[in-house]
Image 1: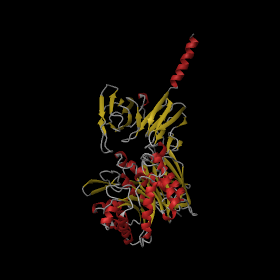
Image 2 (image 1 turned 90 degrees about the vertical axis):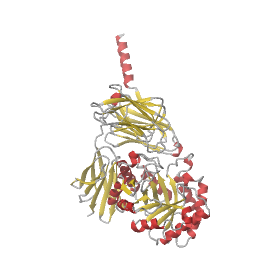
Image 3 (image 1 turned 60 degrees about the vertical axis):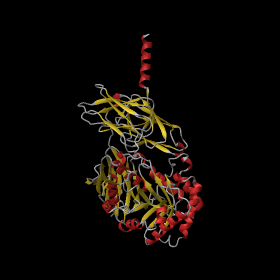
Image 4 (image 1 turned 180 degrees about the vertical axis):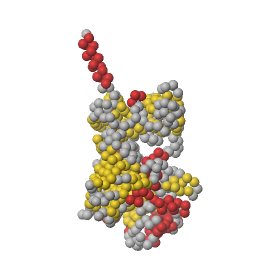
Length: 637
């Protein structure tokens, strides 16, 4: 009997130890896992919205920031699963679900594995069942803020301090402006305090912490400090030149910049520009755009730009009529009058796969406008070139029903199949790749765009490739934690580096130059009347331009959390990089010959500073702190 009881005790003890912990319906965020013994992470997913129009990737990183698993999920795979081994580790793994995600991800692991969830801020992170509970910890002396945003699901947050039962409530209210949210201060304590969070309601949930670690657990005993060891990055530069670097540009406002903004624009040093041209305005006032277009050409020395046709009140589905033709003719006349300096790409529509009823309607308008351009005397000699389709995203579909039938890449293929001789460039816009670990998708998209247009014998695309608008988020759905902080600097550096990596892209433009009331996503903020100042992303643009050379050199990079681009101009050499992770990186560089480069860092304080570098026996070693841009500069011997 005693033996039977002992065996039953062992069996039930083993079952208890192996009990799974489940995280359901994660849409955006990081799950940190620290297994004290070998474990297995089981991942599954189901459709959420627009799944058939969107492919995705999820990533598993180890405690040193190295990529241990990547799962590519094609658009055709609405449901699926993945299993990864988690060997015991003193440092935390990071399971990343990049937002915006179109699937609901479920994770399952051993209950003994310490698990902490870091939700994204402002955007919703998970979809919850009724009255879910989580735990979080506030360290001694910290002034923590509990925050949340209403997305039609979770309607209130109730926090209870376990030590004494103190309760804090936060009702989540609808806000007309996306960046707005609700928050409440938690009482400061002289000792570490554990809180229970009750999320009232069900559905989409956006909740987070400021002033303390933004980490939540299903078990209070899991609330331990994250351990993330330093990482190692090996860079190897080769002499091979892959192609030119793209022009770093900005989408400009539809007006002559006021004098007070000139210093900020000068600091940004854009080498490309994106414009709109409203055909109704140009039809009635043919010289409306002359002043600002000449300003950017002559004063800002921008000799590559793209113009998208539209109309007032954000009308984007233009028709072939007298007004559209008159507006186009006025734009062509203004372009010819600029004197033939540079290249002026023209797209007849802004995101037609989003704005037009169907492809056929857009194509009829394209053909009519194209005939008008080709018949206009001197247009080609003045540098006018035709770009298409300027789609809302390229590989994935736009954010509308039946987005799977409106992928920009498919519309571009059809356009080229039907009208290749009329087309000079493939242009597109990219939005909603909000996660720093997901920005390598930009490199993949540029490669796929090059495959669509084909390559010449010299390896260059047959048509110019223009990523003429991009930002972290689309429309006004922006987060101040992203747009107003160093996050945007890291994101823009990473996106530019990845887009440039293969020497295939001609232009990449940040959207937009300055904030406006509906789009708080500029490089420039307006703190008061006639006051203009650079945001952190604008200061990063300034740093990037200072080290941005003309040609891309081949570079091997061993790291996942670090992006880097090798460049050349005559005898000048540079490597521009960004440590996107939350850990220090020990970096080594080979391929600089006998040179010992200078090293400049650009960190969260948005200031450049010189840093130490160790050059011995042809190998260069240096450190890059967490979330920091870096630039190496030297002259080839």
